[in-house]
Amino acid sequence: MNVYLDYAATAPLRGEALGAMLPLLKENFGNSDSLHAFGRNAAHAVTDARDRIAAVLGVKPNEVYFTSGGTEADNWAMRRLGRGDALYSSAEHAAVLSSAALRDEGKGIPCPIHQDGIVRIEDFGHTMSANVGLVSVMAVNNETGCIQPVRELAALAHAHGAFFFTDCVQAASSLNLMEILRYADAAALSAHKIGGPKGVGALIVKKGVPIKPLIAGGEQERGLRGGTLNAAGIVGFAAALELAQAEREKFCAHTGRLRAMFEEKILSALGDGAKIDGENRAPNISHITFARGGEAFLNLLDLNGVACSGGAACSAHAGLPSHVLLAMGRSAEEAKRGVRFSFGAETTEEETLFAAETVIRLLSR
Image (cartoon, rainbow, N blue to C red; front, side):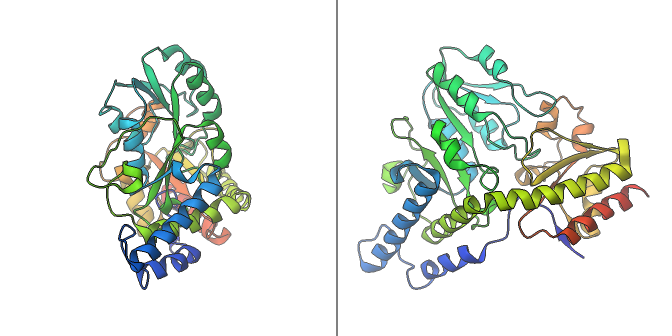
């Protein structure tokens, strides 16, 4: 048996998304900026997709800016949104951590997280200053699945005259995005985490929030993001996002049940040889540090039919300790032994039990 437990890295393309995309890849293949009928057909499809995404999120269509994915959206927000310094958690996605150092106006200031993987409002409050113009904390951590108190952080930012940005890439299947967008000023999304196509995402920027272009070279996206729009990808993104939010409760119940089964089986067999990382977690992510883990163990799991990861896919080839576990106070050696198992709507009970039994068998040798 081959079991895929790396949905946090990417999810398979949903049939509904593919079906929506095919006309834009075939008969309606025109450039959405072209003025002829082929271009108009593509432009109409993009406009419809933008309207549908805005409706799901509870925002205005002109507050939706399409990007090549979550990494671009994170870079755009951290480098060009608001003015002054940017305050962010030390467990953010690498796209936020790296781009904070490139901020146009001001500098990036990291704030600690606690051993449970959750940020504390008081830590951000102690670091706030008149120079801070942007606060950034992801809604769901991409490695541990920890759900962060974004509503309270947004209130703190607004009380100090700063804007609040949240990376919602890992949150779109499990949290209510419309609720988050009620108090966040900006948010990042990515299609391929929720069964949409790779290479497309969005940055949501509320009206009145100042942001400068990141990519020059065209008047697309109201002059703020140059480049030909990925019309087929955008349409697939809209279909996937609608389904992800509509099926959120069902998804949480299904993946939560499988994760509980998976973790109970592993912990009862391995005892102190396995430790669950983080608290208040999204139900589809299980991050476990093993007494004997590491890259060799990941490879062994793969050879025995279990596909999972050591953390973020974009950092998988670096061979470095997890910066998230380091931020949670783990040693560098321990931070190399974490494994992220992530479940999807297609994951079965049989696959879950097989994966747990494989982990136990390999570590019990």
